[in-house]
Every structure is written in C-alpha cells, then in structure tokens.
Image (cartoon, rainbow, N blue to C red; front, side):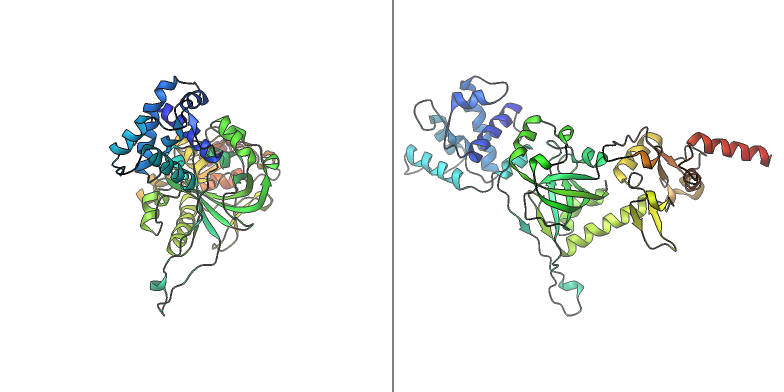
Length: 411
C-alpha cells in the first residue's frame, strides 16, 4: 500500500506523538505540524489511509489519536473506518472502542514497522533478534551447533542516510547504537530499497559515543530534520572492512540461506546464514580483484594464500567505487589497451585492475574518491609499472611514453 507525501508526513507526526507519549492530538494541531501545513478538514481523509496501512501491518489504528477540537475523542469517521476494516465493534460503545484503541497504541512495541515501511527514521523501540541456525546436518554426530560469535545484520534506510557515499568517503562512520554492540563485533549492513541487499562488512571499534563526539557526516543525511532527531542518541563507530555490490547478497538469496525476514532491526546471526554471507564477501574480493603488489607502507589490507604476501590499497579494493569506475571507463587498460576478455576468452571478461591516480600519501580521512576522475582501469603489467617509481607513482602519460619508446627501440 502506497501513501502520498502528505500522508507520510502525517504518519511521521503521529509516530512522534507515540515517542513523546502524547495521548491525543487535535485535527488542527496535526495539520499545522507538517510542512507545508494543510487545512484541518483534509486531515480526516488522510489519516484514514494511514490506519488502513496500520491494519495491513498488524498495528493498532493510529488515527485514533486524532480528535476533534475540544471534544477529546475521535470523530465519527474513525468508527466508520473500524467497521470498514472488519474490526468487531458489536456490543461496545464509541467511548469503549476509542479507549480500547488508544490502549493498544500505548502498549504497541512494533511502531518501527510503520516507520520502516514508509522510510521514516525515528528512534522507535526495536527488537534484538537472535537467529540460531540448526547445523546438525553439518556434524557427524547430528548435534546442534550454535555460534557464540557476535555477528550482526543491521538495516540501513538509504532514503534517510546515504551510507554508501559515507563509506566511499570515510573508512569509519558513527552509527546509532540500537543494540548492545561490543567492540570487536562484526556487522553486515543491509541497505533497504532500492538496493535490498547487504553491501558493507564492518567492525565495531568504539561504543557509547555521545552525539557531540561523532564524526561530522551531515552531508550524508538526506533531511536535516532527520539529523536533528539523532542528537539525543549514542553511537557505535564502525570501521569498513569491505564493500560489495552483489546480487548474491540480495534479500532473495539471504532468505534462501537462513534469513527469516527482511531486516527490521539488529539481527544477531550464526550458522548457515553467517557462513553464506562470509563466503560471498570472500569470493567477491577474490573475483573482483587480481593480485597486485604495492609498497607495504601504503597498504591497508592483506590478502593471503599466494606464494608471497600481497597487499592492496583500500581505495582500489572498494568494489562499489571500482564498479563505478568500470561503468565509466570500461575494462580495457587505459594505458596499453589490453582487454582480458578479448585475449583470453569470455571467462575473463571484466577482469582488470583499478588504479588510484592520486598519490596515496596525499590522501587523508576527509578525501572523497571520484570514480570518474580518480580511478582508472589498468592491466596488471601497467599497474606494476605505475607503482614502481622509487619516490611515488608514475603518471599514466609517463607509462604510455615508456611504451612508445620501447616500440621505437624494438622497431
């Protein structure tokens, strides 16, 4: 069920009355709380649609909180709506039905469902769900094995906070501490619509951070009002380990591998689901990158398993930034024109290194990577040459000139 922008704004204000423990709100007052304000006679029709959505989500009828001026009770339209929705009203007075619904609203602990459905970021109570997988089929004795590791999935509403851009610019961000996270916990961030997939693997490096000590990330909040609501919260600092954009981490595949439902709050995971997610991140890293040597002092991530240790720079290993670079520049080496797919066949289509043009020692935490101007596709040979300069990095033009000189000598 889709609500209009006005209905969403009214729903947000009604949810705020829940948070602020306002028992009722008058039609004219509610009409004046949204921006731009509406005529109070419009409110009745609009909040009826909100209550229809509440019924669909298994929630009490939120429009019961809206009362006529000076009466202290819902208008006749509310009782007609109850009948329309098939709610049993037999043998009860309007006063009893009104009081009953207000009581349900006060006692309801699942208002986050309405907020998440509408893409509204409010500090509403959320359950902390532990998913325990039966891994008996994976053991010889047939016993149940439960992981004791603290590994989570948390949802991100990208319509409120642009977590993707935040992690493209910063290696660490501060996240609302909506569960009992501990330093060292591993978290997979699930990006809601339009992505509906896990896209970030992070680790908790600090907890209980007050708002005035958080990283400045205002530019990533879609609405300043949402940012203002975040001021009374505490935060956990999350360090990016790996970013991935893969259909194998979409909601459909997660449901096929142990997830019970789309994440609505922090989920502690283990067993089959944990193993599946970990394996996809590992495979994506191995698939999207070819081994490349860099100066150890410049490297941040280590990939093991080769005959010698290989180091890869964090900017060049970010698969999201990498995919954007390839969308813009293609998969041919910008220096020599080498194309893996054309040379080795379809199995190697899309294989290429991605090189960061700006010298790494000039990059700091405030630097924002531009995939169009900062990253370029290069073959492993040219990439090795780019990073072979003793006191920095050769430019694209310098390596192209080397190739031209070699051609002259060869001829």
